[in-house]
Image (cartoon, rainbow over all chains, first blue to last red; front, side, top):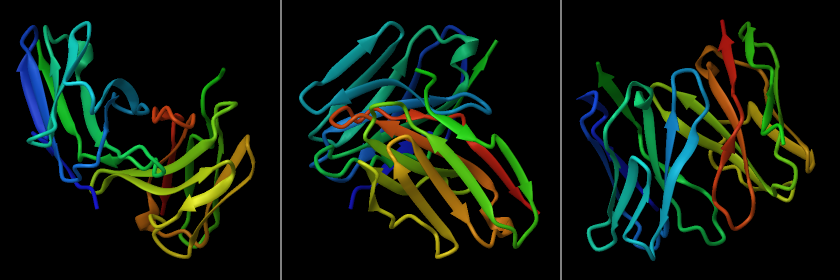
Length: 113
Length: 113
């Protein structure tokens, strides 16, 4: 079955710098890759997602890139701000009859003032 | 829409007691998921329903756990008897078929003493 590995587990960056979180997946049939943000004590919320027919997607300071050949996808946050501090989860799904998302273990992003 | 509604938000109980967690999905969503989140194990899918029918309960830890969805607007997760290792945050999430996007509830934090 699918396995998703996420790195790093903790990432500390200076405010204003960029942050990159990377996930690798094992099932080449996976075609949907969302990223969720979970602030301390809150619920996970979708921030961006990408499907396998697209190589990159941007939404303001956030972007996701997908490399299907290497089976990895990454979250890029530019000009980081204090409110970006949270745990970020990646996930992968084949998205056909099985709607199960396979989750990464999460990355705790710390923005240093 | 008020989003996914979970109750109770916090539950403290003693080992051996029955615990019932409740969830009201977003109206019109046809998928409902129960997740458990702990520091050690991250986000774990326990069970999910499609059109009120349980599709995959392979994530349910053991027979002490049961879930029902009697109608499209209500689901319960029951633990009987509860044990200290069941202490976790339990999230309910719903999604619309074909969209993959999960909308999470605020979670129910369970503490079993």
